Image 1 (tube, helix red, strand yellow):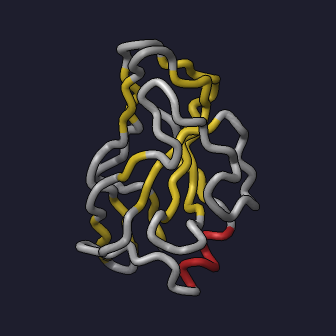
Image 2 (image 1 turned 30 degrees about the vertical axis):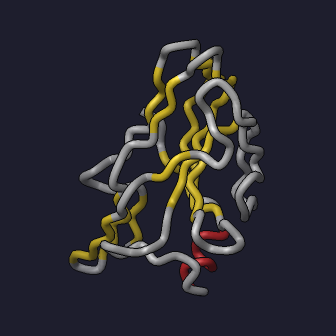
Length: 143
């Protein structure tokens, strides 16, 4: 399982109220695929570069569904509602190595973090790739 890494900008973006990660929020969070290594100082969508629309993949990624944010004893967990998935159709998707989470609703489309799968992946025709979001511990924890 790939581990989640946060972009440095997340901390300031939270302080500036760019993200509303509470349950029932109207904000939309998406995950896109990239074969460009993220850098912790990246700040907005498409840096690292998104894949081009082709063969079952649409640039901009897919939503993680309705988020659930909860706080218990001073610890906040941000949990996505659905695991984002792509199925290659009519050809391959990729290669890609990173799945990048960002806030689609905010006008600047700020980055949150990414999963690194360790090696480039090419999804061949008919196969599906799913980002497994931890529904118990969440995508990220703030303490």
